[in-house]
Structure formats: C-alpha cells, structure tokens
Length: 139
Length: 147
Image (cartoon, rainbow over all chains, first blue to last red):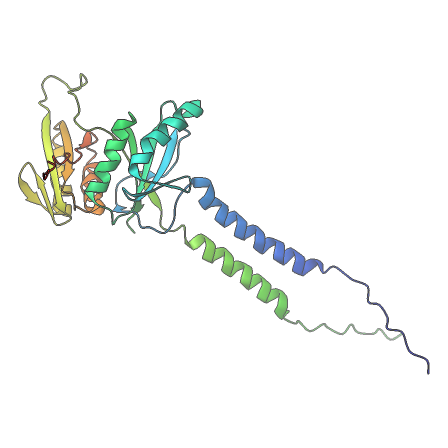
C-alpha cells in the first residue's frame, strides 16, 4: 500500500492581525509611559481645589509623592521624611540642574498637618523655599 | 450584441475587522479616561514668616492674618470662625479693597491635608499670594529616669 505524504503547508504572515496587535501594544505602552515619565506615584487621592494653574514640571523641580511622613516616594523609591534631606543634598551635588532646587508636593488628601509639618521642616533643612502643591481640579 | 449586465455586489459587514476596531477604540478611550482628573498646581514659598517687602507702598499698612485650620468646617482667621466657603468670600472681600496681607496658615496635628489645601485654595482664589505655613512646634519631651 502506498502511503500518501502529507503536504507541508507553507507558513504565511497575516498582515492585518499583525497591524492590529502592533497598534494595541503601541497604545498600551504610550499610555503607561506617561506615568513613568512624570515620576508620579499612583494609588492615592490628591486634595481638591478650584484655584491653581495647569500642572507642569520645571527642570529644577523634584516630585515628592507623600502618603505620610513615614511613606514618601521620590522616583519610585520609598523614603521616610528624615531620609529626604540627605537624599536631596546628594541629588543637588550630583546634578547642577538642581542647584536651585524646588519641590512639587503630591500629598495624599488623607494625610495630616503633622505630616505636612514634617515636610516643611525637611524643606527648611534642605534650604528649599519654593514648593508647589499639586491638587486635583474640582469638576 | 447583447451587453451583459454587471451583477451588483451586495454589501457585507466584515465582523472580524469591526471587532478589532471596536476593541482598539475601547482600549484607547479606557486608557485616556484616567487623565480626566486634571491636576493643578498652587505655588508657595516656605518658610512662612514673610519679611515686610520694600515693594509695599508706604500708605498701605500690611495686615497679618493667622488662619488656623481645625478642619474643613472650622477655620479661624485671627479668631473669627469660618467654614471653607465663608473663608473664600472673606478673603475675596479683603482682596477687593486692595489690602496687603501676609497670611500664615497653621493647623492642628490631626488637621487633614485637604482642609489645609482648602484654606490655601481660598487665598489663591482671592489672589492673595503672600502665604506661608507655620510648622507644628516641636513637642518638648522630658525623659523620666527611674533609678
């Protein structure tokens, strides 16, 4: 008995589903890269305000994400408020852009004045006088 | 000669590309909807206690206001009690008469950050920019030594 050989199917790349997949991946990475770029920490609520200008970060500004005085995030790294002044000092010495440093505080609305007070003392220790408070626009 | 008529093609909805398109649009709108909560910034200078500025005209007497924030419903300005919206109106009234004011915001240890920002917001809405914060005083603790 003669056995019939199976025909080998030649592989073919489907262009249209490939374009669909690429577009989806592109949108996905574009979206999430925006969070990483801004150095913003997510998962907490900013306080509401009516006044204020549009958010923008200047080259000499460092974003401080603060849940409480024991939980502060700068560039995705966790610190306590006591560790912040030495860290800012190191940044200042390393990068001349930060010689006249200012801070952007993204504080959780649940934190207290005691936490804010600790932040202000850290600013005074680091000789930083310009602070920008980030808020969420009231709809 | 008989001319053959072209048979008109019947339109057909392609389901699979339509699903692809809907999915892409869905992901697109879902992703960008997270940005609808617009962020704003309120600039300030620390520390608070501002020195009298040379720019102030000699005819105007600078006014020192101490805003003490207990919570969002109870904010005192030099002892007079307000709530957040009342504070905004008071600040606007002050700004409208062109009175130079140095504002110091202070709070209790357990005052919420939202309440502090509401007070700052009231000043910012009234375009009163000479605002400072007074940090909580360090608690003096005495160590008890037992022999």
